[in-house]
Image (tube, rainbow, N blue to C red; front, side):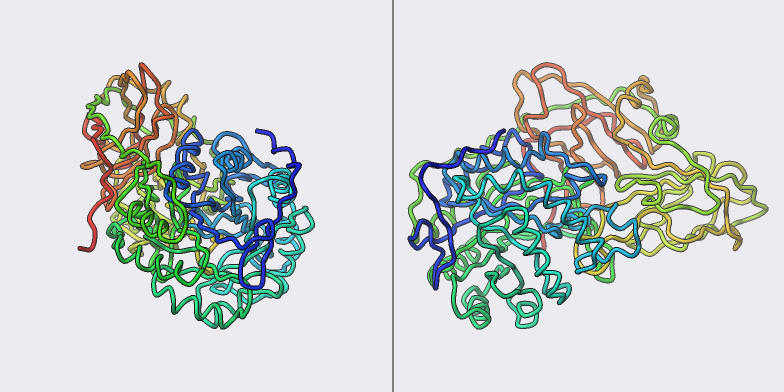
Length: 592
């Protein structure tokens, strides 16, 4: 979609002594976070409209650099990455936009939004004023310029604010770096006001701020106290919480996080009562489709689940929740709210689909990736495989029992001898060794899964795969054949599918089902092991019996009238021979 033509009427948005000023008049930002890259593009307009109906006047989004630039020199803006179209839909709804291009975004997104290829040069100093990093950032921002610059409010577009970096005070204190980012953003033609955001502690606000750029805060409770701390560091200018946390994210193996709607509403009311602006994080969380989820590691590696529901006002399927109505009532006490109300969501249809075709993963690996020879095991990054899976293969001849040891696994390795499962090595549980069967001879396979790159802290950018050496019986094991596997190369898989039989994982299972009209579906993964699902070739994401998530969201636009295909890669025991679609999402148990 083309950028809007500049308006004949001049528009301005500036930072005043106490307020934001829209065309010279005091203006309060009532914003909601909605990440275009976590929502099917055919559903953007619906989610944006529901934000306006809750009383919001602005939509905020991060920009995921690594999604747009999976390889250096590429910049994809097609389909679900069409940021220009997303911004135009915001404008069409009569709303403003806040854009947060990072370059680091956190967002519980893979690698915090930084491209994995950026770390190929060990000397690159990310999130710093190191020149190679800044050169890559310059290329990124120049690629964004044709999208962002003509869509600023002073050109007749919706963009009123751009954020520089993201919670930098929690990471570093390189003020020169922040100054460089301001210069780079201005150099591409951005003229709207800039902001920074940090948690409202004295240390973080001091380290993450820069002269001439509006400081904002991130918090989800104790609003008056947090805003008072922000005001101590910024005597003039509008107060803004640019991440008002109304929920939280989930890790595999933990519980589903929820927050009390009444308490969240009270904290929002406190914030608005003192005249502050707000960005509700999240208004609608969406989904970590495919392999886009991030991870945290604060001593224990914890990958994020597929759902990014976030216990937000709109649930993962875009339906209003009790929190939606509670926050709408609060906003109505401080600003006009449309009379129109969004319709409640409908239950999904119950379907039972036979998974009547199958193909063993090991029968198709040669079609999913190119094997190369190595004396020592390379990382996945060495192979240019920046997400998903890699297969490490070596020939062995053991005499007696033989312990297999790996220096480090990032993040999970299933071990096979001649196709038979031997065990699993995992980063989360720090298991790096196991014993192979006595007198094991033949082919040793380690199927390694990148479960998501760390998105916060100092471990951002670390490589994936097998790290260091592999030893068998205490001796280094060499002469490897290794391939990054594109497990989503589904045409190759379809060619190998046969009538279903009892196949131990890892294996693909496929089935077909008919729909009269495409509607949102909810795939029940209860009783399945671990794996990935595609519907009509669209990657829904990962499932895992570790929980808490026990369903996968299927957006209606990926479905079609008539025949549809479901394809499952199950890494362990093959799932039941049926796939069940149920009436609603099941995101698992909570703490209560």
